[in-house]
Length: 460
Ligand code: GAP
Image 1 (cartoon, protein in one colour):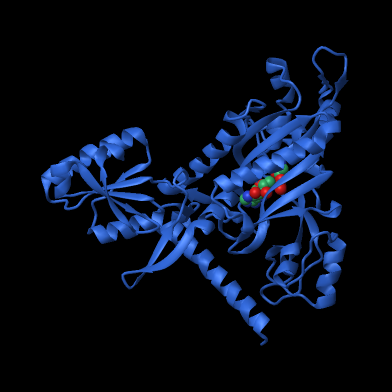
Image 2 (image 1 turned 180 degrees about the vertical axis):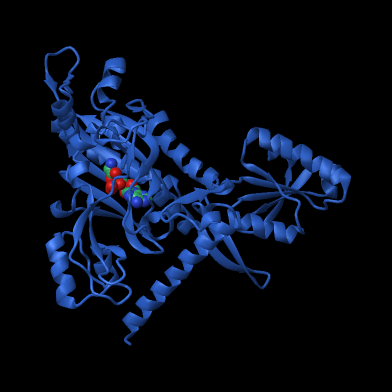
């Protein structure tokens, strides 16, 4: 084996190990559990525990603050998940929201054809289904169980359900596969209520559902996940400047997530790989432990969606420039973020191992504004009522200033408490000891450096 291959394999094994370590930490410490775990799980679904939900909300709230609250050109909405099925006909999802699926001809397990190729070292980006099938035949690629694979067919990824008490063709509805359509269908409502100047955007956060053929890589590819999307409506002549500005704002957001710019890459997606609605797409890829993969994307969706809505609904989607007779259907730039992928990037960038006092330590170097717990408060000894009373008082005051972000921790000895808090990424551990009773100072122990300082209680 040459050195390059050996190093690649070592890198691959190390990153696999890191992924497994992160998954195990998430489960052990109450971040993320397998969905319906107690019944053996449901593939592609994940449940967030107390720390996971806080971390996820911190990421989503940061996004909302940076893209909605701190800007005066972006409006928030929260549309229903169930939508009139015409939405998905008009948007093209009923006909084209498909993945290529092939089947093990012996045990009938199903796979995504491009994933089968990827797992065999072939990048299938840009290939047609027929070209993928040809490659499988040519290279004699078998299923993971060693059996021949069928020819591919398309598989629509939308979950179907039925609305109302009778199930018929007319009652079919879909769980939304993207939050974007809930924005487009509210374009006219927002214009009528607010009449914002162009360019302006509408933002939404919420669940999206895709019946992925092969959910994998932890929360990276799930069947139920969350998106944070903006549809930014522009004069068609000015799409490029809006695109550039939103790309810049995206990088600012990724920086605020604490992600190292050297692990962030822009991919100008070639035409054959873009979604059916896009005239230009930049994917932001991140060096995840599973490899360089898509974190989010920005697409120039032109007037594709508003024109479809206008055609199918018969209602005008034109915007009139204020004080003129100039009317047109705006074009759209769409930054689309997946919450789970942002969360996975944050966790993998924060995961650290080092050695303290001769033993291995695992800690999450989360930025303070994202850490689920900002302060852990402990009495040095839990059997000393005077220490517990003082610690409770400090805990109550800190909790008032940082609602939901302060944890009471009096389990085990101080060393064990520090290790536990390090593992969940708590930046500051506050310890109340006998000196506190004398001079109102506490020990603050910092997660990353493990340094301990004496701090006045009022300065916390
Ligand atoms: N409205 C455009 C849209 O939905 P997309 O590239 O299909 O575009 C946008 O999805 C983002 O949603 C992705 O970049 C990714 O972050 C996230 N995403 C998509 N499918 C996902 C899945 N199965 N599991 C987790 N996140 C997913």
